[in-house]
Every structure is written in structure tokens, then in C-alpha cells.
Length: 337
Image: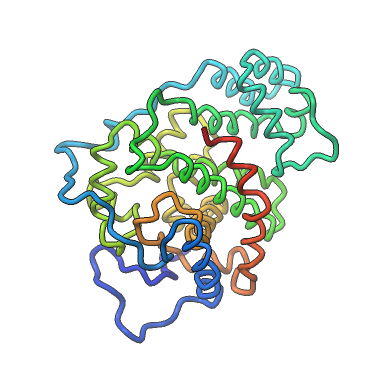
């Protein structure tokens, strides 16, 4: 993939694009037109001209680095699930037994199996049946998302990150990533959903563990001209995507997922990873359609090559609106506290 950009947002070191430059692809134009009323309804903002946040003068602490930020430890139930997923001899019964030892996790798994994501014909009543439906690998990774919502004793300051908005955006990106995978005829579309769901975990950790760093980043995005990841790189020398990829590695999540999270703002760095490309496109689409975790920042950049990869040049953006209208609220309830 090349790094050609399809949005009108300027690069950090360049100024605004010259007047009369090439217009964005038709799909992007139609998406933004369709997203305008949704953004105004859901966030009160235009998708193109957001207001400045209230972080004047915020500076990153001296010496702050990516290596200084570590995620809190996950519960033992998660590690037991990871070991089971990595063991080729594990059975559905083995994994169900591990999940059943954690009542809140068992409840989550049953709710997940009965959610619109899997849409079972008959209600799933047992953990073992839920595991069989979801899959051994997927369920251990999905558990990471469930446990993320209870990792921190204190939620982030709401001016840094709204948790309802965070999960709404995460689920929207998951649903849209899965829809893009289906456009390519992919079979294991749950991988795409999980990658979308976890793509912004670095944002959550930054806002909770290092609020001064998060504030510095938001200050850089204050005039609405920069996407948050670009503002982070200017303020901190790293972004939430690289932090999220580091978390995935520490949690021993699958390599494809780690790469997708780390590369979701620049999938051209991992051109063989279609999951990263899907999450990249889905992140742009979710933001354009009003499911925004950081409404004060500009829309994220979009690498134009992903449009062809998922045959979006001829797609109708309204189909993606329908996907969010049909599943977003129910799926978000699984994660938002």
C-alpha cells in the first residue's frame, strides 16, 4: 500500500492542501455527506470542523516515553484462557471450565453469544455452547475486551475520554471492520471485529495512566486541524496505536491482532495485514458517521488504497449506516459500564 491520503486533513508539517486540489473519492464524499446529520445529532459537531478542546498550554512531561507506560495486569482467568487457546490439545470443555470459574466472565460470554454479532437461531444457555459458537481463539481475545472495562479502579477524566463514547466508537469500528471483511469474502470475520474493538486500547491506557500526556495530545489537536494520532506524535513522539500494539504484545494476543492495532492509522507499514487495513478504513468511517471517541480532533487520515482493497469505490455508504443502526447500541451495552 502507498500512503496516499483521501481526506482533506493536512499533514502535521505541511499546511492545508492547495486550493483546487483533487477531490476525495466519491465514496468518501458521499460518506461525509451522509455523516453530517448523524454527527450533528450524535455529537453536536460537524465531521469536518470540530471545535477546540479546553486544554490551553498543556505540555507533555519531560522524559515521557512509550516504554514508561505499562498496562495493569490482567486477571488470572485471562491467562488461563490464553494458555488454553495456545494449546492445540484444548477442547471446548476445557475453555468452558475456565470461563465458568469467573461468574462475571461467564455472564459476558453468554451475553456475547446471544448478541447480534452471532445472532443464534435459538438462545444460547450454556457456556460450553457459547464457546463452541464463538471459537477457542476468539473467545480468549474477546475476554481481553471484557476485562479492559474493569481493569482500572478509576475511569479516565471525562474531558480526556468519555467511556460511553470510547466503547461506542470501538464497537462501531468492530462492526464496520467485520462488514469490510465480508465484502472480501473472508471467513473468520470475528478476527476483524475483535481487532476493531481493541484498536484504541492505547487511548484508554493513556487517559487513565498518564492523564497529563493525554491532555498534551488533545491540546495539540485543539484547532481541529489534526487527527489525534498526529497530535500525539507531535506532543509525545508516539501515538496511541503504537501503545496499543505494545499492550497486545504484553498480553500475548495473536500477532495479526497486535499488528492491526499498532498499524491501524498507517496500514501501509504492514501491507500484508488485511485486518489492519480494515480497521483503518472502519475507523475513518465510524468517525465520519458520528461514532467518535474524540469529537474535538479532526477526522483520521485515510490511506486511499484501502478503498480498492475492500471494493469501496462502488459501495453505498448507506449500507454501513444500517449496520450501525442495527447493532451498535446492543453491542455497546456488552462493554460500556
